[in-house]
Image (cartoon, rainbow, N blue to C red; front, side, top):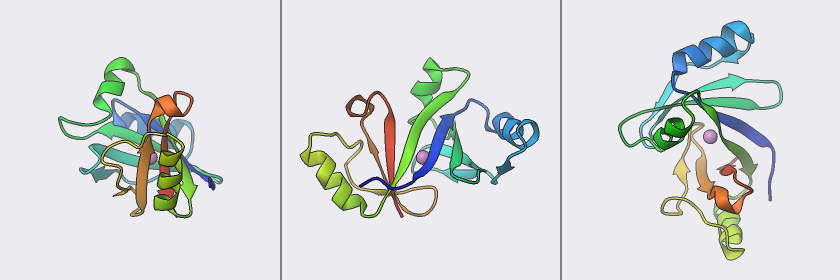
Length: 134
Ligand code: CO
């Protein structure tokens, strides 16, 4: 069911300084910031040869990463995103095996314009998992 690792996401308190760290100190290729109001975050993608790192900064008062940053004020690893061929089929299979899908369970359009879902970290070894249909 799982395909490639699409990205690892890191929540950060200051997107500009985190972007500068990856661009200037680590010498990585970084994207322009992209506001995703539906997800309550602004994102920057770090382009690597084999995958991406997604930097996430809260956007708006009800950002889903605000609580995470309250507990991890320096930032930290927030989720991993795996690619799947058919997100509805993957969701139905996971739900049938007892996994919890966050939100209303319906895929939303993510940062790459493709459908995404999030799975409950308590069902996946303490890791928030994003699935993206590619
Ligand atoms: Co993500």
